[in-house]
Length: 406
Length: 130
Image 1: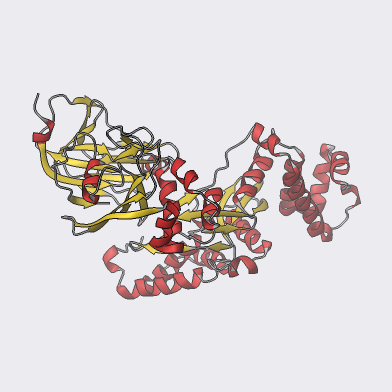
Image 2: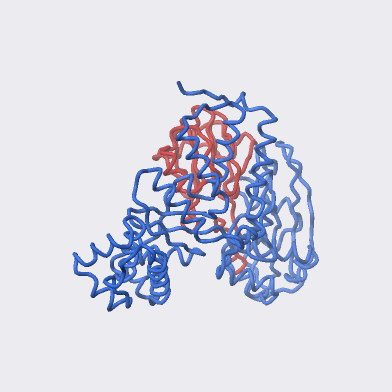
């Protein structure tokens, strides 16, 4: 009979222990230690365990170190329009792992493929007489797979590009380690009375966690494509939620690839580096139409150089600051900035030219992102500016008070 | 036709750049439409949408009006999250957020509009871009 565990059964002690175990499992993930100590066999053994648990023959395991490699290998494995040699490598590796050297040799000779393997890879299966050669043959074809895949011209892959996808399988994802901890603690506190096979299976998975270092995976009959975890992850806590954020470096760092996030929004490398390296000009900034990008840039400058730095970049001065306490209990600070300089091509809301640029600074209550919204330079009061930015049919005399702000 | 201003109760809320205002009644010039996203970003695949039992109306060029028959949930999430949930906007449920926390709308009528952005090179307002 299945055991029923309810939410109310989970005590503070349970959650306290969960937090400890979670931190233990994540200990080397963010700082790169797990990435550094990883060995390919950890991922491969883990994947083989998954396939064996499903009573499936074990696959060729291909490792992608970053997102770009994942996309390339996805196409060289599963896209028949890209390359046939890489698919040959997969077939050989999968066969070696499943049936061994001698049976693979029989299959190759029977199918008349040996000459093809000699011509393409310099490998003659006729010469193999023992299973002792398995690891070296497997390594050879793996090496060939990566070499060929990485040398295929980008245009060839893009011409018939297959959008990579991943399996939503909890055991082979960044959440795998957390799910296994849940099982561990539920068993410890509530004695799940699992049968021996389930227990042994769980223990086998746990033994290779977190060192399997798997973030995402795509499984097929003969190939399993794995995306490794990043080598560095930089986050902050925002409203009790951990989010990707760094104003000094990549939030997610893979070997050879960096992804930049500010308050959980991705920002393109070009803009991030221009801002951090202080090569972004004010003229470039004011041409940006995307508000999230402008907000990200403003946040980077503000965090790294303070308000003074932001005002200096904008060559702006603070015109007004208002604190508004809303009915939700949330207090909002609205600031109004204007450039000291006037520009002949800048207009106010009345169509009058030769105006300064003006911005209203708002902080999103959900994300903490600092938005600089272009506003009309005719305003002198920050709240009046905020009111004016409400939808057009909302009158200015409606008080600026939020019931809820998210 | 009534004055829109007279329909406002004074209660205002926002979720990101989506702002909503309680109304005393559905404006007479509102046209009933099918339920859909209140706002969506093609670039990021995110959306603001209301979930629950409600009717949706369009106020030509101004925004949408929602008549909530029950307490409804305004979510900011991703299209792929919505697809996985299988929800067709009919069930009041909280989805995994993209950036903004969910908002709860009480039963009643609400006008939805988008925060306006000023273009200093054109001198007029338009919707915020993301």
